[in-house]
Every structure is written in C-alpha cells, then in structure tokens.
Image (cartoon, rainbow, N blue to C red; front, side, top):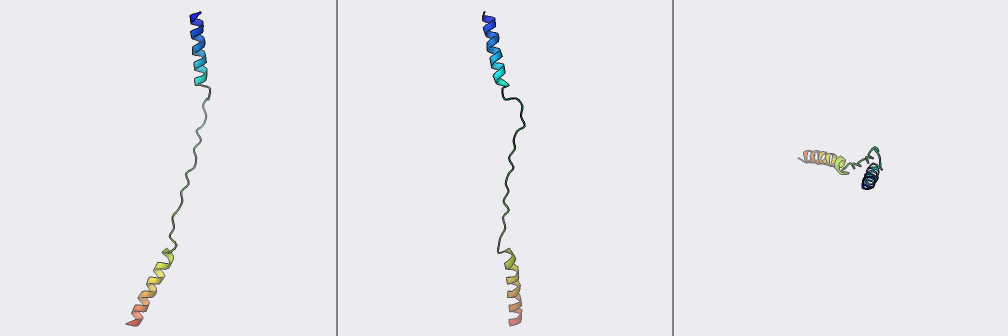
Length: 58
C-alpha cells in the first residue's frame, strides 16, 4: 500500500511539473527613441552670416 501511495505521489508531482509544456518565449520589441536637436540646422547658417558680416564690416 505504501508503494502505491508513493507511486501516486510521484505521478502527481511529475504531471504538475510538465503542466505548462514547451512554448516559445514571447520577446517584446524594445523601443528606441531617436534624439534630434532642433537648433542643429540653424547654427551653421547663423555662423556663416556672422562671418560674412564680419568680413563686410572690415
């Protein structure tokens, strides 16, 4: 009787261990936010205008 109870306990333990089965892991995509500077396109023309104005003034 003890062997039957022990076998039943092992059977229940083994069945709950594999209850989930094998499934593909779900990988979530990482969101990468690009950083942009809005003043990057304005700085170069302003510097160019300053150089032209300095050259014209002298």
